[in-house]
Amino acid sequence: MERAALFDVDGTLTDTNHLHIVAWWEALRQADHVVPMHAVHRALGRPSGELLKELLGKDRDSGQDDELSAAHSALYGQYFDRLAAFPRAGDLLRELAAEGWRIVLVTSAGGSELKALRRAIDADDAIFATASADDVSEGKPAPEPVEHALQLAEVGAAQAVFIGDSVWDMKAAVRAGVRAVAVLSGGIPRADLEAAGAQEVFDDPADLLSHLKNGPLALGS
Image 1 (cartoon, rainbow, N blue to C red):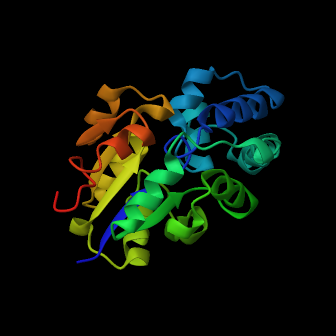
Image 2 (cartoon, rainbow, N blue to C red):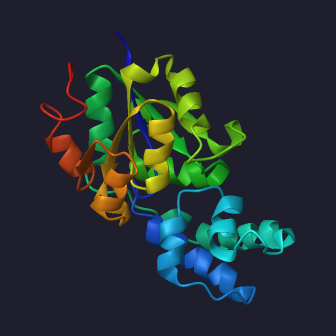
């Protein structure tokens, strides 16, 4: 029976969350919006429009959204040649693929950003498919990105595990009926991840790799 391991990327496989925080903070600051970095951190993982709604309120001038998003992208793009994966992230994907898992990346990144992230992970040979924000009408915490990943992997929800680092990742997985597993490498507290539906929590990809024989990704688990 085919099985799929669905992975968020930023904060889960790559050490990029705080780069996004700084880029969003600076983009907002340039537009005279004063938003604390911790608030930006907690909003990460949502589509840009929802992130801005979370940070600036539903009554904001949404006409600024595209400009703010473009500013964030330009600022974050300065880091593309220096993006780094977490230790053993690539090894984790390759080991899972060798065990027969279909690896699908579930990310809001696309285009040159996604290429930079995949280059950092350096495990293209293990990746079965990628579900990007361009493929869906709603981003996490809506279930659509996870459901699309299931379609790409050609498996049902019961044959998949979703691994992510944010509250939005966990909620999307739960709503799609997929087992939710969290990592702490994105900086979100364990209690918040568990409250959002994480069934198991690991420190980072290396910790998850060390538990392949008896963790949520063990064959037969």
